[in-house]
Length: 413
Image (tube, rainbow, N blue to C red; front, side):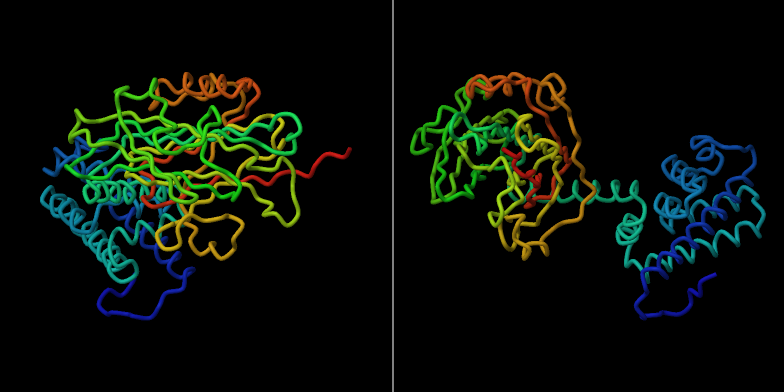
């Protein structure tokens, strides 16, 4: 058993820490299991154990769930904290559980407490460490941390959106431009509202090719009052935005429409970029092609979809890369100096296959109507796209989520 009476400031090697967590988790699970099994009237379910010991059901449920895990890392992650565990042990002692069983459990709890304080700093730190070796724990830890970040950012910025959706559609350019792809962007902010008066609600898009301009789906330049608002899909339809172009950026700012739940709007925008991606690998021209969504507003959910025409990059599936844009702004995935800004999160890309009917999103009831609208405006065949989706709950505020493609070589003539 670990010596909990002395403080050791020597840095711990990763492998040693992994072994220590495994040992503490296994010992603690065995000890708490022995206590629970000794409580009269067993075997117990959470409510029965709570009633027998006079403790709350959350504590009994967590303790039972943790001590029954075979994986020691899962047991350590799910186990209640040291103080709640001591409360459980005191209650078990009052119910007549063998003092030797209680003593072994108390020693295991002391080792657990020592592990948290000396090796992890606090319980959140321990969960973060365990998350590196246990995918389930990592997902739970990240979700909790991102949710806390969302709440803080929403309070400080004074606004949030229930769902942010970013969809790119890549299709071969027509006629003589068949070596290139055209791209349509569909962006939605659903349930967007201010929490306090005066909060600025803004959506921005950035061009990465010097010869491109921001354009509507009809190909008209975005400037002044000519904006990409899809008013027929917005709610209310009378929603107003101000358009401001600054170099390679265009900013869309929501007019003041009050605060609180009754002021919530659904905002839909669409842009078009002609000839902005080559269809085939081009030596020396930044071979990796990427599309991205940025978390500009605190959001409960981000849905980032990529629809790729069957004749665009056949056989190529995207890699997901996420950057922190706080210091260096939006990243180019072909710039190796930005690798330092990459964030390692447990997010994934889900292939959706072909056919719009498979692209539904429960958070966006009219999504298929919007996709069909874009296809009609662009004269694209909706049945010739394959799709990929990244759904993120509480996206990391200030992050850039990229889908990255490696174009294949051009076919032989």
